[in-house]
Length: 204
Length: 148
Image (tube, rainbow over all chains, first blue to last red; front, side):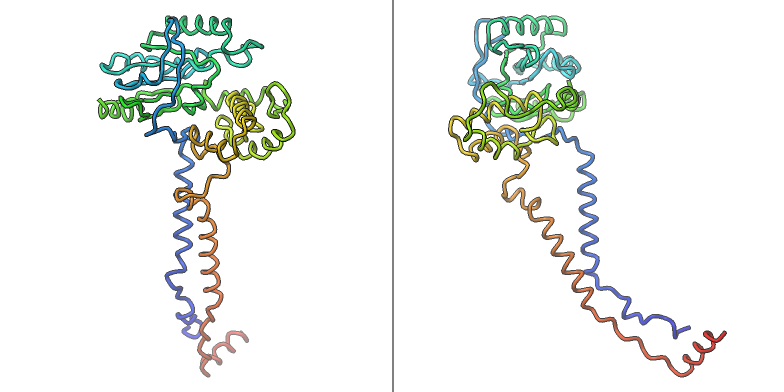
């Protein structure tokens, strides 16, 4: 029997042989985790930066809101539209947040009239603004006045400065006017409890 | 509306529609050349597997208009890229900048390849130790088996 046994010295592999295998396994773990992540969750480069400068007309009012007004107040900025299903879904959460003391609720109605509805009208024409205003107000009347201030971003230029890529999106701007938090997609009770509320508490 | 769903619908609706940098007027030749150069490198954030040049999502249309405006105002490609990166992050670039955060992304595969090659080379270079010659009694046993 011993005649056919292989000489053990040819069998023994040095330990470094397993390094690529270990690296490969590491990569598998890396990619497996990557697969479970939501590709729509793109980290915002705005976090920790000053909110973009803008000035937009207040819906149903005569004034404007300027980004300089972020200073001194904690503000929740919600980009929404009446054509966005997720916005309706998250609205009760916004209503609840509106009851939080010391939090200014700012709605930005993003591109209320989309390209197909503008049909040749300029986005900021009086006619388009009038139509969007009526729709925006009717929707809030029906679903709840969650916003202390509601703005019209007809051409989506301000949304673009915020880095919007799908509605709804929610941002938290601190008293210094710095963006501290962003959530893309409808707010859920989990996001509220695990991320937004702790962030709010830490900033208040 | 969920971005993914919106994207699917928009993409399905407009499948086959030409998606050049269509805004209003045709571009001048120089603008067109710059456009062709940069737009394919930019990712549409709504339809993530499409470039900004080919996507028909509404945001892509807006961003194309914006990029075209920047080109016509004489901004450099680097300006345009940074305009988009400031808003949407490195994600918007199909070719992210080479910087410490992206080193792993850029050089990781090459490092792995080198490592694997060096292991392979070292393995191949190892000469297997010669096995001990059979003793006389072993030879006899082998012969017996073979003749059985």
